Length: 189
Length: 232
Image 1 (cartoon, rainbow over the protein chains, first blue to last red):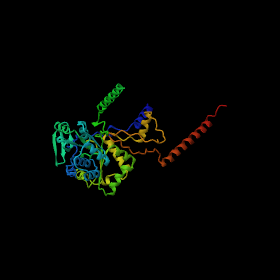
Image 2: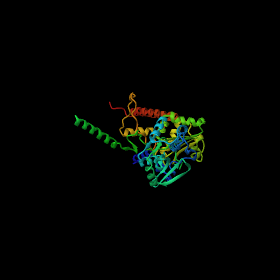
Image 3: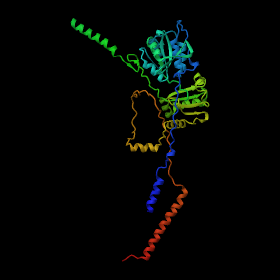
Image 4: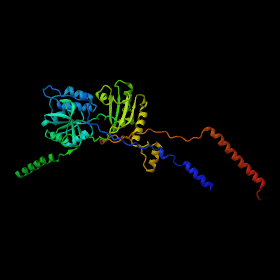
């Protein structure tokens, strides 16, 4: 009997010492509120449109400069600001970006999945509006709303209904373009 | 001959008509254009290293993410954001919420901060920072870091084969798929296993006890033989 008691005592001493109290309880997750717009460019990073050497507006390049800054590519953005300008066609812009070694993606077929991807990954993208005559930055797209940053008036975001924006974009050649680098980190929650 | 030419022209015409129809979209990018695989990296975590561009400590910490293998690996798995204090991004998005410079901050995709250290609170070495980040990732996931001895035990239990050294391939590595993110795998630091050793002073009584037991056993045997002589 004594042996059994001794064995039981030894077993109790050797057995796992981890008490349930040692396990750190999982803290209840705070419900995070996503930043709106997803691409929340500081005012100082928003590039206004400028007149190119050919006397045209440079909305495509201005949009690209803003997006490059958001993605931490300040030197590339400066290079674009100094060396590019005037209106641009998709192929010509792609060629210039290739020459500059910029990593980018674009569509010219009005595929909404591209816009969703760009905003889901917090990169944003330039999109054509007004029948293809102008480009602005799409900085937010959710189930109901879209937000635009117009390089002709960079102080405020323009909020429009998602379907309105998509219809406008598709009727404006459906061109969208964005650089592909790491977007700025979200504001801490 | 004319029929043959006509057939050849028909084949060419059909081919020309079919090829553009086959061009499809991949992730929204026209397949006949130069296709870039779009990274679905919305699940990636963020690491911000914030500081003064001229500050030696800031540049040292930035260098860790290039020179330390574990931190370099981690850098590839996250959205890595070096931020200098002279930028608009810093002034608007970091200055109001950092405790000091330099700062290292790790965030989940939903912006929740899982690790943040500033100034002297940043570990002194790259290994220390890696360990701190590993701990933060584990804590955020409700996990404890797996100690080396436990890893070995798990491997044995799972009958996993040990990696055997292989000669380095001469060919270029195959392109890797784009890392679409998720929780970064921070390599946990090796924790030395505690060695079980007896303190030196304990050896003296143990030896003494052994000697006494041996002496007693020998003496009792002699006494037994004296008192109870063996039958002859």
